[in-house]
Image (cartoon, rainbow, N blue to C red; front, side, top):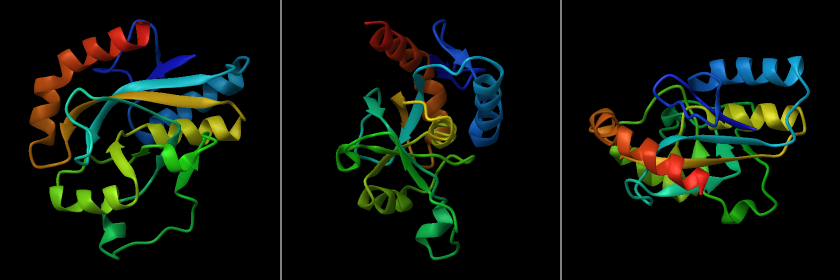
Length: 173
Protein backbone atom coordinates (compact mmCIF):
# COMPACT_ATOMS: atom_id res chain seq x y z
CA UNK A 1 0.00 0.00 0.00
CA UNK A 2 1.31 3.43 -0.96
CA UNK A 3 0.67 6.24 1.50
CA UNK A 4 1.56 9.93 1.63
CA UNK A 5 1.07 12.92 3.92
CA UNK A 6 -1.68 14.62 1.94
CA UNK A 7 -2.70 18.24 1.30
CA UNK A 8 0.07 19.57 -0.97
CA UNK A 9 1.72 16.12 -1.06
CA UNK A 10 -0.95 14.00 -2.67
CA UNK A 11 -0.33 11.36 -5.32
CA UNK A 12 -2.94 9.56 -7.42
CA UNK A 13 -1.47 6.21 -6.34
CA UNK A 14 -1.12 6.91 -2.59
CA UNK A 15 -3.59 7.26 0.27
CA UNK A 16 -3.18 10.49 2.30
CA UNK A 17 -2.65 9.83 6.02
CA UNK A 18 -1.95 13.28 7.49
CA UNK A 19 0.84 15.77 7.97
CA UNK A 20 3.29 15.39 10.84
CA UNK A 21 3.96 12.70 13.39
CA UNK A 22 0.62 12.84 15.22
CA UNK A 23 -1.83 12.85 12.31
CA UNK A 24 0.18 10.16 10.52
CA UNK A 25 0.22 7.97 13.64
CA UNK A 26 -3.51 8.33 14.27
CA UNK A 27 -4.68 7.81 10.71
CA UNK A 28 -2.30 4.98 9.82
CA UNK A 29 -3.17 3.16 13.06
CA UNK A 30 -6.88 3.54 12.30
CA UNK A 31 -6.34 2.19 8.80
CA UNK A 32 -4.45 -0.84 10.12
CA UNK A 33 -7.11 -1.54 12.75
CA UNK A 34 -10.26 -0.97 10.70
CA UNK A 35 -9.34 -2.98 7.65
CA UNK A 36 -7.14 -5.92 6.94
CA UNK A 37 -3.64 -4.53 7.48
CA UNK A 38 -1.73 -4.04 4.23
CA UNK A 39 1.06 -6.55 3.50
CA UNK A 40 3.53 -3.70 2.94
CA UNK A 41 3.52 0.05 3.57
CA UNK A 42 5.43 2.34 1.22
CA UNK A 43 5.52 6.03 2.11
CA UNK A 44 6.25 8.68 -0.54
CA UNK A 45 7.01 12.31 0.16
CA UNK A 46 9.39 15.23 0.12
CA UNK A 47 12.39 15.84 2.34
CA UNK A 48 14.90 18.44 3.36
CA UNK A 49 18.60 17.62 3.07
CA UNK A 50 21.21 18.17 5.75
CA UNK A 51 23.74 18.59 2.91
CA UNK A 52 24.70 15.14 1.66
CA UNK A 53 21.81 14.88 -0.81
CA UNK A 54 21.15 17.44 -3.53
CA UNK A 55 17.90 19.05 -4.65
CA UNK A 56 15.77 16.52 -6.58
CA UNK A 57 17.79 13.51 -5.34
CA UNK A 58 15.51 10.57 -4.61
CA UNK A 59 16.37 8.63 -1.48
CA UNK A 60 14.86 5.34 -0.39
CA UNK A 61 15.04 4.30 3.23
CA UNK A 62 13.73 1.86 5.83
CA UNK A 63 15.16 3.71 8.84
CA UNK A 64 13.96 6.79 10.68
CA UNK A 65 14.84 8.77 13.77
CA UNK A 66 12.99 11.23 15.95
CA UNK A 67 15.68 13.62 17.15
CA UNK A 68 15.01 17.25 18.02
CA UNK A 69 17.63 19.92 17.37
CA UNK A 70 17.93 20.60 21.11
CA UNK A 71 19.37 17.10 21.59
CA UNK A 72 22.59 18.13 19.84
CA UNK A 73 22.99 21.15 22.11
CA UNK A 74 22.59 19.03 25.27
CA UNK A 75 19.32 20.86 25.93
CA UNK A 76 17.11 17.74 25.95
CA UNK A 77 17.05 13.98 26.35
CA UNK A 78 14.53 11.25 25.65
CA UNK A 79 13.66 8.00 27.39
CA UNK A 80 12.25 6.49 24.15
CA UNK A 81 14.04 4.51 21.50
CA UNK A 82 14.36 7.26 18.92
CA UNK A 83 15.52 5.19 15.94
CA UNK A 84 13.38 2.58 14.21
CA UNK A 85 14.23 0.46 11.20
CA UNK A 86 12.75 -2.25 9.04
CA UNK A 87 16.11 -2.80 7.32
CA UNK A 88 18.34 -5.82 7.72
CA UNK A 89 21.41 -3.60 7.21
CA UNK A 90 20.93 -0.31 9.07
CA UNK A 91 24.55 0.73 8.52
CA UNK A 92 23.85 1.12 4.80
CA UNK A 93 20.68 3.16 5.30
CA UNK A 94 20.22 6.87 5.02
CA UNK A 95 18.33 7.68 8.20
CA UNK A 96 15.35 9.99 7.78
CA UNK A 97 14.78 12.28 10.77
CA UNK A 98 11.22 13.20 11.66
CA UNK A 99 9.96 16.07 13.74
CA UNK A 100 6.89 18.27 13.63
CA UNK A 101 9.26 21.13 12.84
CA UNK A 102 11.37 21.92 9.77
CA UNK A 103 15.05 22.62 10.49
CA UNK A 104 16.24 26.06 9.38
CA UNK A 105 19.56 26.24 11.28
CA UNK A 106 22.16 25.00 8.82
CA UNK A 107 24.83 24.82 11.54
CA UNK A 108 23.03 21.83 13.09
CA UNK A 109 23.27 19.78 9.89
CA UNK A 110 26.76 18.54 10.76
CA UNK A 111 25.30 16.86 13.86
CA UNK A 112 22.73 14.96 11.84
CA UNK A 113 25.27 13.96 9.19
CA UNK A 114 27.70 12.72 11.87
CA UNK A 115 24.95 10.30 12.94
CA UNK A 116 24.22 9.09 9.36
CA UNK A 117 20.98 11.10 9.32
CA UNK A 118 20.82 12.52 5.81
CA UNK A 119 17.35 13.97 5.33
CA UNK A 120 14.28 15.04 7.23
CA UNK A 121 10.62 14.31 6.59
CA UNK A 122 7.88 15.08 9.08
CA UNK A 123 6.02 11.74 8.88
CA UNK A 124 8.39 8.83 8.31
CA UNK A 125 9.25 7.99 11.92
CA UNK A 126 5.53 7.65 12.66
CA UNK A 127 5.06 5.44 9.59
CA UNK A 128 7.78 3.04 10.72
CA UNK A 129 6.62 2.98 14.36
CA UNK A 130 3.05 2.07 13.33
CA UNK A 131 4.35 -0.51 10.84
CA UNK A 132 6.58 -1.98 13.55
CA UNK A 133 3.64 -2.20 15.98
CA UNK A 134 1.53 -4.09 13.43
CA UNK A 135 4.53 -6.12 12.20
CA UNK A 136 4.16 -4.80 8.64
CA UNK A 137 7.23 -4.35 6.42
CA UNK A 138 7.66 -0.71 5.42
CA UNK A 139 9.88 1.63 3.44
CA UNK A 140 9.81 5.09 1.94
CA UNK A 141 10.97 7.11 -1.04
CA UNK A 142 11.74 10.80 -0.65
CA UNK A 143 12.63 13.56 -3.04
CA UNK A 144 14.76 16.40 -1.76
CA UNK A 145 13.08 19.78 -2.22
CA UNK A 146 15.30 21.94 -0.04
CA UNK A 147 18.30 22.11 2.26
CA UNK A 148 17.77 22.52 6.01
CA UNK A 149 18.72 26.17 6.15
CA UNK A 150 17.18 29.63 6.38
CA UNK A 151 15.77 29.28 2.83
CA UNK A 152 14.11 25.92 3.53
CA UNK A 153 10.50 27.05 3.12
CA UNK A 154 11.09 29.26 0.09
CA UNK A 155 13.08 26.51 -1.65
CA UNK A 156 10.42 23.93 -0.78
CA UNK A 157 7.75 26.10 -2.40
CA UNK A 158 9.96 26.83 -5.45
CA UNK A 159 10.87 23.15 -6.04
CA UNK A 160 7.68 21.43 -4.89
CA UNK A 161 5.82 21.08 -8.20
CA UNK A 162 8.79 19.67 -10.10
CA UNK A 163 9.68 17.40 -7.17
CA UNK A 164 6.18 15.91 -7.08
CA UNK A 165 6.34 15.21 -10.83
CA UNK A 166 9.79 13.60 -10.58
CA UNK A 167 8.81 11.45 -7.59
CA UNK A 168 5.62 10.35 -9.32
CA UNK A 169 7.60 9.35 -12.44
CA UNK A 170 10.15 7.51 -10.28
CA UNK A 171 7.52 5.49 -8.42
CA UNK A 172 5.48 4.68 -11.50
CA UNK A 173 8.54 3.52 -13.44
